[in-house]
Length: 181
Image (cartoon, rainbow, N blue to C red):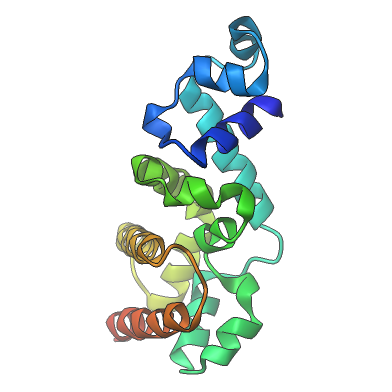
């Protein structure tokens, strides 16, 4: 949709919190009335963009346990060969279309909350089965892993290079050590 694409295009140069409906309409070459036929506010556009990205990331995705098992093996080559098991945020940020959005600090919390809502029913039961944790404990662990991973990945500009793989190994070992009883 042209409105969502306009938002993403503007976000390449401008932080989300500095973008307004007028700017999106100008970029999309539409009238404000057209914008409001489809969305009530800019946050609805953002939610729709994030939801689209999350739907795209679902194909071939593994579980958090799959990632932890690969990292626990100590073989970074396995992670390179099995990138489909990477968390949703990493798979989305790899996309040229969404990379700038994921680098935008002004929407990080919003993106994380959308990911939590989208991935909760898949990740939390996996964590519970793997760790023996209660639901509320697995939810907290999920939020901890997601927030920490998101912050680290953003600080590395979401670029998967030798440094990134090394940090994934370190963080994975840290998380695994905490999970194992």
